[in-house]
Length: 416
Ligand SMILES: NC(=O)c1ccc[n+]([C@@H]2O[C@H](COP(=O)([O-])OP(=O)(O)OC[C@H]3O[C@@H](n4cnc5c(N)ncnc54)[C@H](O)[C@@H]3O)[C@@H](O)[C@H]2O)c1
View 1 (cartoon, rainbow, N blue to C red):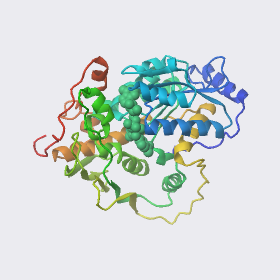
View 2 (cartoon, protein in one colour):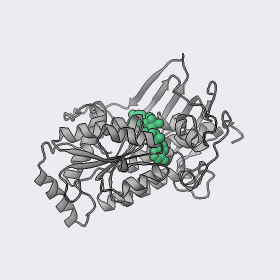
View 3 (cartoon, rainbow, N blue to C red):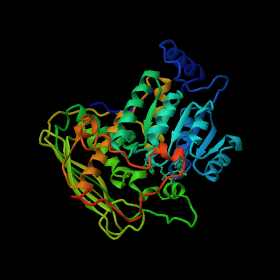
View 4 (tube, rainbow, N blue to C red):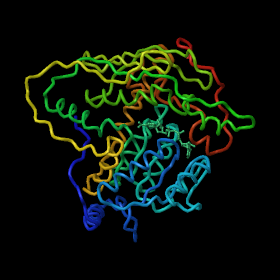
């Protein structure tokens, strides 16, 4: 198991940038460069100008500053024009480069941005990421990266294309860029703790926000505004939030689980179709079981953690002092940029897709009540789950009007 930290490369000069790009070009990796021709600034674009997108953009600009580079926000894209323009205005983007609508991401990718930040709801990620990679862009994308098995596999495939093109891909599973976690991963990797033999991971807290459909509002606009309530948009909160904790388990154990068996239910939600709680026994094989729980109900016991039981070890390990500038949310962008400069682009597509798939496996287990096998999602093409595709799909949103699933109708274990 390798930790994904990327150290060194402080204070890199413009000449180093060009040298790094030239080396990549010489290696046939012509698309990976930080500066568009004729520009001395890192040119960045944002797809999905909501809360996290704007935060990620600020984090990216802080990272550019930290490594001593100028940056320019070149274009923005959002389903809603007001959001694209709002972010654009804050960063001096001309109105004609603030794109809106279902294909706004294509308009943004047609500009000369060097780095694209993607922070829409997760259901659009496979399509947007694939397009960004095809357009030769370096990518930061928020987690989770899919809502169904074909989507997660599509991210893995696009990640491989990004690798071939020498593009950097960093995901918003920011614990992988957080010093405390990196130290622990280093200790595990170097034998200071022994093997993980069991554990528990949790994201339990209160209710999130939700939106009601306005009179005459299209189903598409409603689903996009109320995305944290619809499984088709978010993957359910076991995928949307709890993916962080499951990602740590995958990272530390060094492999994905082999099965999931769980239960869950819906108790207090009014809109959408998600469950309010999930409790899953993930079997990582080799006798390693991790209990995963997540809940969004006010007035209940909360906690976000990953606890592991180790077999133990007497080995002493000197742990390096991992950099964490501005917290993990900035550090992940520092790592992204430095990896490009070093000519060793980070590629986290597979890791985040595998952790997203892990969470999807948990959700299928709680929605159905049956034991779900990893191989049925990732390689057994005849399995019941391999082609499970949540609708409306991202492509449906581009084709025309979509129909929202009925509010307050959810999965029934034993039947679905
Ligand atoms: N890493 C973290 O800690 C963290 C924290 C919060 C959110 N997130 C993730 O960030 C993503 C966004 O969450 P948010 O809280 O910013 O949501 P949000 O609703 O505030 O923002 C999403 C934005 O994307 C836009 N959008 C939706 N579909 C689009 C499309 N097809 N094309 C263009 N724009 C589109 C919406 O109009 C909205 O402005 C989610 O995947 C979420 O899980 C990660």
